[in-house]
Image 1: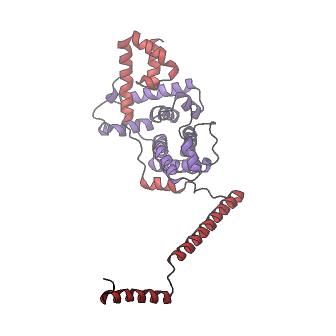
Image 2: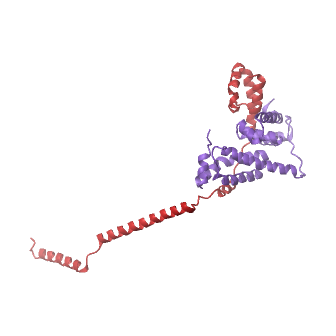
Image 3: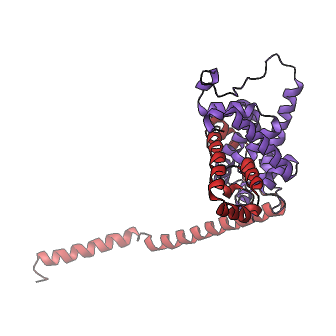
Length: 141
Length: 180
């Protein structure tokens, strides 16, 4: 690479060689190794302009703009046709299965906790009373 | 090299709200700055950025990976919208004189007191449109020379010429800051 070529690249792309086109990297690095003072001066001058350009801050995004852009975004996909039918059928089957399971659990629970009849309750209470009476009378001692 | 936005775009196409916000966070500041620096007008830049996203949302479900990078496509859309506005400006009669940009190093000139960023902005606005576009795409947007040339519809050599002339003019306008 010639001096003119090196200067032209710095003039176009700035003082950071990493931002130069990749196909020039090897040649530019070789030139910089051969002419370090010259290359450093060229790069430093270009870098001063880069630094000045960077002082122009990016434009700030307002909350209103961001929300307006987000609000215009696609809504979640709505399923149509066969896909929707399958989806609804699947959901319906699931719902039916859940109902059936709930029904079975209900039946099982009801069997487990069904109260005994009133007669049985009274008989049990009387039997307990008899036991107590026996204890009071000294029959159980 | 794959498109870094591809996976996010697929989720956007499904209407994933988190993906929408992630893509907006990634691209909106970039596009707003692109339009702002090309047009030099914040309100117009917001319009361009918003319209670019409206088109991007429409495109999301039809996007075919591998054809182009999504970021490049968004730049193409935004640039075209900027070009439309610049063309309308040129065609519209105006009584407003063009902005005067300080191009001398004398310390007592009026624009000397401007903040550095404002001075750079003024110097950029004073450039011919194509030189400004080249510098915005390569320096600020950090696009490769090939991407920038393709977006501008010119050869890489023509792009380099625009960059060199633009930077030379900026160096002259900002000579007191950057030296000779």
